[in-house]
Length: 143
Ligand SMILES: [Zn+2]
Ligand SMILES: [Zn+2]
Image (cartoon, rainbow, N blue to C red; front, side):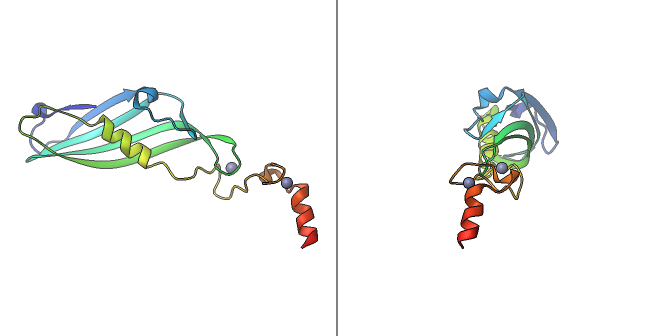
């Protein structure tokens, strides 16, 4: 998203919107797969020699649960503010890379299909959300 600094009036909010192909932004990771195009809207305001950009981002993603490895769909929704000091000679500020950074930094360390996901049995690999497996029954009996 390129902001035309010359077009901005001092202290007046201007709205920018752009739709991105997630592949162009390189947002996919091994756990996160974007489904559709991403809409990013940014409110921009220039004050003195600083540009304030308030960005809203939301997208549907296909995720892999870190515990049970099941695929599930979710919406990633984020708001963030970025500040740019402006140089007199600059006419455009491209905020795309910073938006990308913010989105990726906002990913949780672990994605869980539900907060209390029980994960897979480390022995037999059974999805423990669907019930207890034999190895767990056995270890319970031997305790
Ligand atoms: Zn899970
Ligand atoms: Zn098991």
